[in-house]
Length: 194
Image (cartoon, rainbow, N blue to C red; front, side, top):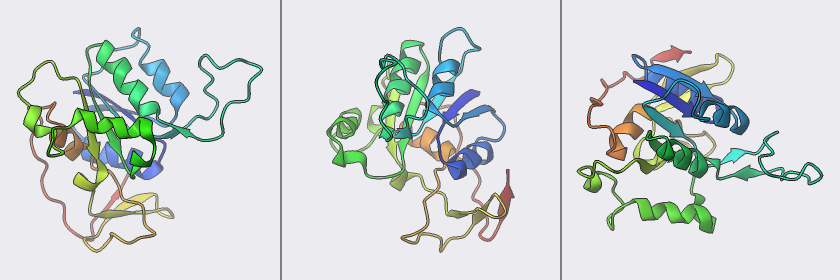
């Protein structure tokens, strides 16, 4: 599969290369580059996996040249998923924190069934967009910033350590990719450099 992954966090980009090994993966780290790869003229993707909130960075879109763009994160993943869907590409929005505090992002619950599951709708072949929370697909790993490596550790979930997305599991959890097989279980204390 040819997969576009969009995430501003280095550890989630590293996870994409690791968990999606065997696929043709392109990893993008900002809003401007993501839109360039979703312009419809580039090679097509089979899947788009995206973070929900991303820094606006130097992306201006239709913002007036005289206006100062906001210095904050925006729910760009919603637009990436819509753009991919318009191109006929299945997409998964995977959020790594509770964005339900924002009313726009809270609307993502409408993509789930009444029990909070994506899988209940797997039989719908028209479905192109899914939302998966990190709480359902975290890696049992930590990011070692000095080594620039993912270190597998079952005791890694601490308050001050960011959780890392398992993009492969997000594809399975989404219910959009029945052709994706479960991944082998990784050993604790394994180090994966990317």
